[in-house]
Length: 253
DNA sequence: CTAGGGTTAG
Image (cartoon, rainbow, N blue to C red):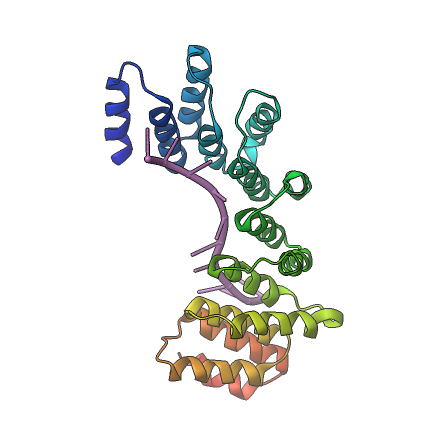
């Protein structure tokens, strides 16, 4: 709805400045009209009066959400590498994020290491990408490197870390990784139902049902309202620990 | 004056 109004206003401007172009492109991207954004991008270049800048590129890149748009993304990436465009750190992070969304982790990593000073968002995009790709081990590996780099994960990144830690039930390095998940969780200031659920499911997968129940009780005590995912995780914990009777307690819910 | 990362099970 807002997009329609925006494009009406935009089309009424005879000579939009770069900020206007960029805002419109971001608007299209945000509403998943990447092709419209790309059309504007090409119009800027055809006009020749302005050069797309970092904002323009980030706008386009962030609108590419599906693997089928990989070709477009590669093309934009190529343009970024060419001189004449202002490639800020934002653009690099946006590219890492885009390739992560496409599950092209080799490409994401390639962009990541080319950044001289990757910021928290670039780290976050990479780590989340590995997690989404199913490589939780690598996600946690890079999380460690982030700490080595002297950076501190914020609440957004922690959400991904917890998911990765919860999924990693590898017996050999399980306890270590699980410890990391717990450590992150313990240091969280603002836990919510999702973060509790993530850790409860992680504990369950590691066969630590007793700890999972303990956390569940803590959750209740703090006045948090467990949801279906909480109970699902608790049931899972019972399966992994052979606690059939305890599982029965939750089945009535 | 505009822009980039995230959230639960099997």
